[in-house]
Image (cartoon, rainbow, N blue to C red; front, side, top):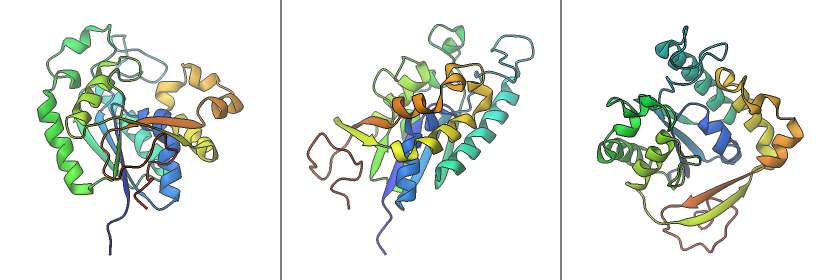
Length: 226
């Protein structure tokens, strides 16, 4: 039997898989594609229950990580994700936080060391398509930037792809809502369903490695592979 088509999404924190790639994960899972989510950090510096921020009384990093892992697992189940891989690095916090200077956080892990671990997952799953952030990490978050660097250390090149995920946007919304600890105090929780559908009915990517010579722009991550 031939190996299944495989999509791997490399993300920084629990909830990123839903906000930026929830639609394609749901779409391709429904099409029979094997989907793999790699989450680089535990998300320790996210909000604690009640919107308690890191550094405030009542914020317990280990408890936040436990909550977010459970949310991540449930979100992946909603999206039909086949495999979830956790690299277990420590959340670096936002770009203007002092936490990013800690030696134990993800953004300070040597790119080659993290890339070696990710390459091991490439060997295990042999993904046909790998998606991650652009070089700015979407909004310059240290962990997003570093996740992009680590991923690009394993695969190279740039081609733009936009995928219509509007039929799956409700599953994307439900999966993102699973990350209640992080979105209850954010604009996500107040966004009307139709506005969410309008804003997030497409997901855009840069193809990092081309083996099939498919023309661009493309609307399907698996053009030329099936």
